[in-house]
Length: 250
Image (cartoon, rainbow, N blue to C red; front, top):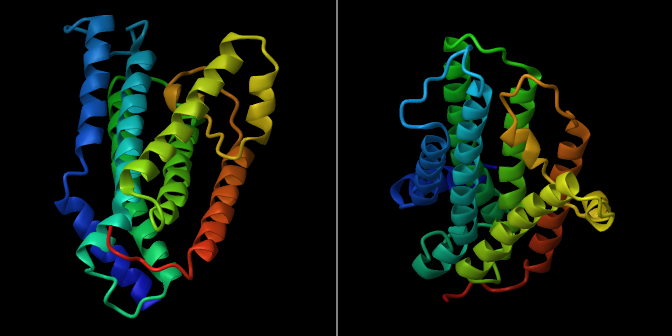
């Protein structure tokens, strides 16, 4: 396991050096801009503010989506960047260990960003004496699960596909999930519910959007666990499928 740990540490250092923070920063700035447009520049968050929980939840939601886009970018380019630089490919490392190390290292970066956003939102809510329920913990769990699913998709696909194609496919899955949830909430159509039941990557984005609301949402850790297990299955299948391929230069 020393090889996996070494690849993970290398991935963390490489991710910090690369310009991987642009999607996260863009998502955060977009969230702040939308909040200011909706509630005004002089908005004050307090327990007496009617929409305080909405402001904090929206802030956390945009923080999460910025982190997920950053995670998708890092995961999609994790293997392709090695095909170009050949930094790790000259070492005697098994394919699955390289993929596992890349995934773990990128997951650590994503988890640090997500947990930092949660703690910052929690601190604001606590400082303003807002009621904090288990919805916030479930929202963080959904965000962490989503980042793990993103990496289980993007990292192994990068073995065969270019980074741009891999990232596009991964983001399409994320956006499809969000759009499908909106169809379920706003329409009476049956097919979105059928897709929700059978589609393997259904992360409850509502949980991330309503993380700091007082009202109890449908907390379902079984769905998160199922999505993570299916993601591991996909990761295993693609890793086995690519085990005999050569990681040649692009």
